[in-house]
Image (cartoon, rainbow, N blue to C red; front, side, top):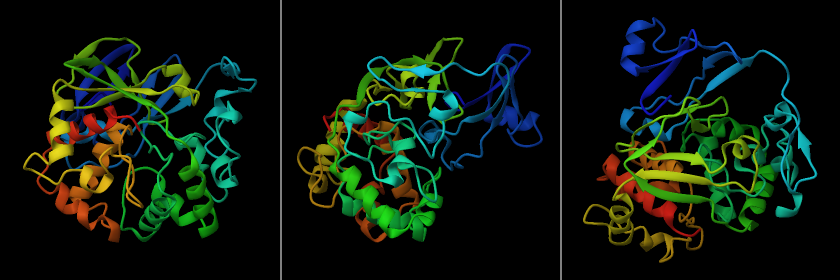
Length: 338
């Protein structure tokens, strides 16, 4: 998907179609396969169904590749003694640990998973995650435990694997994962750049947004486009390579007004999350986190998909926010130091 577009490759030619154009052409409403002869056959994943297409950019739903051709060589990273095949890198129960000295010993649920996927596969051993997941480092353990309970009860809905993971995990695993991520230090991970144009992108088989191989640019519109600083490093799950969030020009200043004063539309975020936005007690820090993730959560609060006991206050906070407000708030928060 490129913004609100879907990709189809036929005969080596890349074609871009609006969702409605493709749905009109294909009887299965946009679920036709994507064929790339050099690598194999791509099939669209069943992603989260967005009620608001204007925010579709923040809900990565990629394509699954059934690969053909020769196996990829072992991957290595400068400074690491480890090497992995791409299959090992993509093993969500045994994610790569390129630099064990960057974090304390991981509990089994983080390192290898138990009844489900390993936490470290999406959130990384250092807890910073990618745009399609959450930045968990330094979140209060009590908050993490509460969110897992909400996933399990259905009070917190969402896209991706988290509801199923919450159901599969026992209390001991939840507690150990929460304690691990809560103890991790924060680190700068997202660089925010205001712009009017962005690279053309699509969402790959790992639900990561990457640049279109053919290149090109397009207007950013009212979107946030978050890309890895080093795409190959991010695909290898390198814990040293962060992200750049491209945001519409002027959105940081607008977001600062909304976050610090409410702007007449909402309650200032600083009232509950602290003057520096790094959290108060069990209220989570929100500075320096992934911009796309922040937009998703604001939307979930507004549409009721986050409705647990601890979320009631947020429903009033987001009630009057527009999509552009959410983008601006996310841009400003991501630009702050975590």
